Image (tube, rainbow, N blue to C red; front, side, top):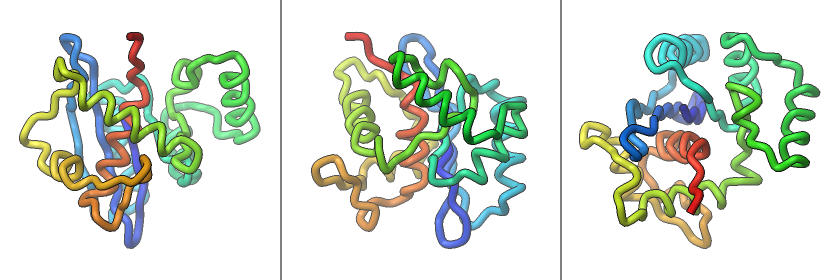
Length: 178
């Protein structure tokens, strides 16, 4: 699951995907306009725990309050020293952070370009690696309108930014071995 948390003037995006029949299949993709904080934490809990049994929830690291609330909700440590130590340990030993925690903070400031490159790479796979049902219109529109220069997304020209960011976050779980 990818979560791009936004409140007030920003939108809140949630995308859930799974690997099914050797394809990354979108199971849920929605963008919420001005939701309440508690409503979204409840929604993510319901989706992640009851509906899809999420193995990871990748959250934009710019939203520590959402990360803490989700970690609390899913029974993980909210101690930022522990979280930063775990991230540093994974970098040092070339381990996947998603193997060590359920709710994973992902900084766009550091990894945004790589996330966009990774999304483009997976979407352009000649075997159609990513399957998006036509009912996920907001996600499809966001992908069609995405404009980037040197792998920096121009959000002023891209529709449904939150759902696109949540999509890129959720793709971080899928690694190519070829």
